[in-house]
Length: 310
Image 1 (spheres, rainbow, N blue to C red):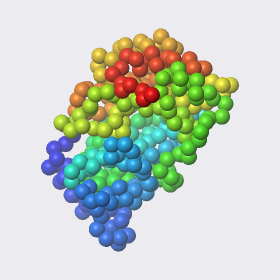
Image 2 (image 1 turned 45 degrees about the vertical axis):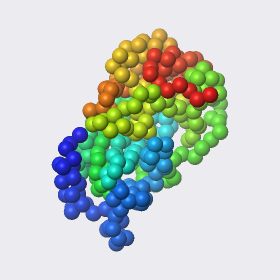
Image 3 (image 1 turned 60 degrees about the vertical axis):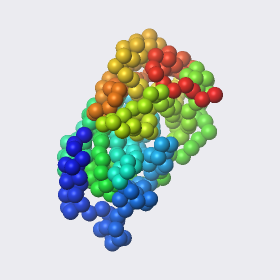
């Protein structure tokens, strides 16, 4: 991550050349990170409301509902594997921002250019899936500074894409997914999730604290193992997501997934400078929900994850 002084200088340049939307509309001074209203500022500048999450995180969901992506003939739901997001967390008088942007190949270069102009770092660029059509790339971002300036830089990058900026803070909740036994999946996995937008999502935080440059980073900033399940028809489910792993866990988890018929689709970093060093392993499979849950449980058992609440 750039030195704080250089980041502030870059953000000051942003303030002079890219005024926040609120200022452009004559709404008065834009609150800083130390202001109680910085969340409202982020929502106003991005053009999309976020949601408060545990650990003081303000997370903005940006699903690519504009894309019709298929994998092995299965149409992927936006919240299943096409969910861009940005998360913000207050640190004193500044805000930390992290996120993951789902991009088409033609959007990558313009987005990276805008982020560089705005002083926001790109920490990773890679695939999450294999065989998806159209192919999607995943670009991870990190920044720190004034909330309005960070949000402005990120909005400039989003404007280089067709990412929809309308809608509610998150997908509508559902008690169950039609034609899919999520209860059997949860029992086999040993973890409860939440159904929303046709996707059953499970988040598993790590047991140890993760720090970047000496400061603890909450799990909601993208540091929890993410497991998503959607219907694949005929009672079957499709799974994707990523395991958050230390170096010593990579090979055991990879083997557990493969032994249980789950395809490993990518292994890479998302961050820079975190302690302990983390690797992110993405996966894909279509099968009976209970069998999928058992396979994922075998892999989770090889990680230092927090115990499930009883």
